[in-house]
Length: 268
Image 1 (cartoon, rainbow, N blue to C red):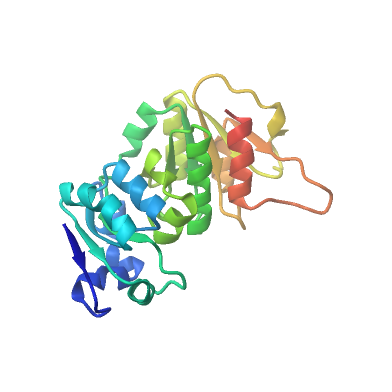
Image 2: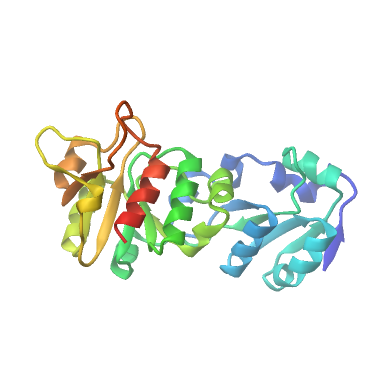
């Protein structure tokens, strides 16, 4: 069933106007229950959300995408709305009227224990609070066959609008989980048979190996810190190995998303 909307103030469009915190609270983002909502922007991201089994609430489309998505949305219990380009532009607040934008229920959050147990290649994010970086890291991880993301409480939500948009919906191919303490997580990873490789330009007391020289057998986890501070001293001490990326003179670091792409490829 497809419903045509001809008024930008129609209350059925309210969710598309909500801010991130209205869609899902911090507690809901950390809950193991499928509470709260997320927004998938663009026909490709909507398609990948539906393909991944995410439950739609409402999807707003142009006529072509409405015909493409309506059966899947209806069968999953959602509603498909059609509106003009002007209404779609006004409601979403975007300069370009997207062909499709959907409001979905958040899927159940995997526990870190389960993700560690069922994976062999993981990326750990500690204080990576920029959603564009998280989305880019997710896209790299999915493209290169890594299994999932482990995020500390301060790292950005992989299902935030910007993170999902940057990842082009490839986040749905990954498991992701939250953890409380990076040092406790590293200990758990070691106990589960993972080698942990922390990226850092240098360290005062430990050897830092060029990334190209590292060869890992078995399970591995790449540990990434914030852009400004990097990993904490305690985390760096616990990592199995420390690695850096060779750079030209006068350049001391890379954007964390760019560094993750190089490291994920090197550590395959």
